[in-house]
Every structure is written in structure tokens, then in C-alpha cells.
Length: 98
Image (cartoon, rainbow, N blue to C red; front, side):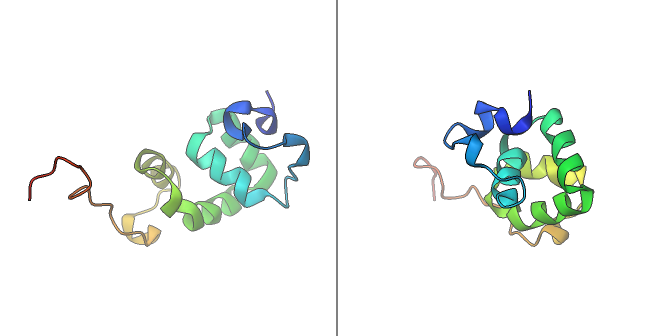
């Protein structure tokens, strides 16, 4: 299935209205967070590896830790290159003891 036709990625938008270039950042945020290998191959072909890496660096803060770690490894990036603070779990639980 073509990436832009996947309801698992774009359940909340009319895919007929998506423009591959105009909505590039939006499309890639969805692929970074919920895409699969087929979506990765599509995005590399559509945008190129360098563009993907730069888009990841710009959107890494908005990703969950698991996705962020995957893409960090995929692009061979260190924590310092991401320029994002490590997420602390202290104090986030309603049951944490201080």
C-alpha cells in the first residue's frame, strides 16, 4: 500500500488533500512516529536521506522515546547531536515518592 494511503498514518486527514512537498514536515512526523520499513523506503525515495536526517533533527523533540531512539540509531547520531534534553521520569508518576 502506498504510504500516503495508509489510514494508520493519516486517519485524521483527507489524504487527497496532502501535497507531498507542501506537507512534507507533517508527513515525515507521522512516518517518524508510526511508520514502517515500507514508509521509510518511500520517504527516502521521495525526499532523500539527507532531508530525512535534517527533518528528524528538527522533529526529534516531539517523538516518543522509543521512536526517537530508533531514528537516532538509524541516522548514527549521538545524544549531543540531537540537542534535546534527556527526559526525566522523576516526578511524572502520581505514585512517585519524594
